[in-house]
Length: 296
Image (cartoon, rainbow, N blue to C red; front, side):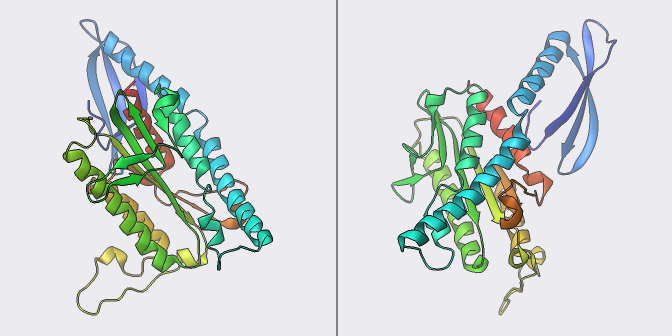
């Protein structure tokens, strides 16, 4: 049973079965549609599935609290960096000081790195901050936020980005072009054997957006010659980022994408929202953990 766009939300074994087999009922969902499937499996196979799900639950058991801590770290780091730069008299213009200081996304990077290690990948195979360069096809190298290299094979590469106001328009274009370009660069390099015959790696994209009036209000589109796709008409930047992250996965540029929104007022306490369930961090984490386990 392949796990392609399909997630197991619950599994229940119920008694009976013939010829040493057990019927296994799986509650599955795909593209938002829920349905029930029943498989007849050998007892050992059924036990293996159940044990695997139990292990996944242990790996992800405290995920909600870890996400809250990552969100709080983002806003706390952003505030602290801006204050330090202002006190030193070297503050950048506007809110740029909160971006150029870096480290805001470290909470999410630590979260995902920790899940990979919990899944069984040795900590020495998980790289962040240092030794995170990978060869590209259109450029010599690209630095990723997390890369996983085990037995000389590229297991995963993950990018974690964010955006706060007020310049949502220009930064949206920059972020989308950057993410698409990085994916095309990596997959082309992969095709050309840059990663020494590695099996297909997990490529992940996590994005956090400031939840505010400016990111939530409808935005007009310019159509001087041709009509834009209808989903973009009057779409807010919040909606545009949701569509962007979803399309990155649907077009197979990324294996999985996660989209988080949080306001500067409540976020410092760890409060966040998931604009679309198919882009939740939980779903992203499950796909990442499953991929990591396959390389243990």
